[in-house]
Length: 151
Image 1: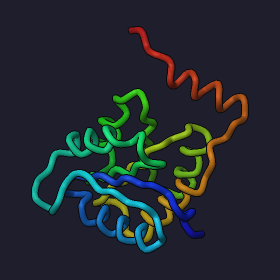
Image 2 (image 1 turned 135 degrees about the vertical axis):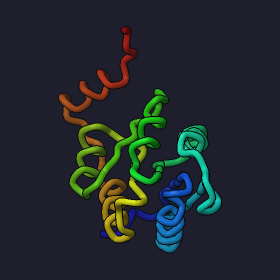
Image 3 (image 1 turned 90 degrees about the vertical axis):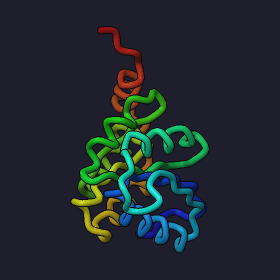
Image 4 (image 1 turned 180 degrees about the vertical axis):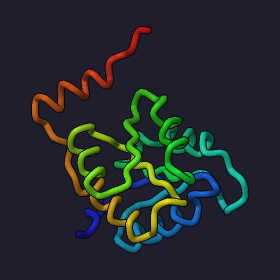
């Protein structure tokens, strides 16, 4: 399965996700995608909330966002604090497909210390290649997800 051509994809990471981010960015570029990277510029310490904030600030100019930290957990928590983000931490291709299909996720989160390059590439491809479902039940649930909470 090849990534659809001409996608605009932004990737962000902290230091723990930096090696995987670089590998994925190079692979995406080789497939002909337009890629931008934010966050850590090396494996020197870099806070994952800052990387998430940098990506989210530019997300609306891109088709998809990819965020990577050590586990993928912290960076997904931070990203999901923004109203225009549906970030999904995925550890399998099936999770990536369901995140897109059922939840209309627009940001894929990965654990750089827990996911091999080949696993990450398969997950990323599944995420990008899957279209959001327009079935009434999914659309209704997305509207519920997007409605403001009152506590």
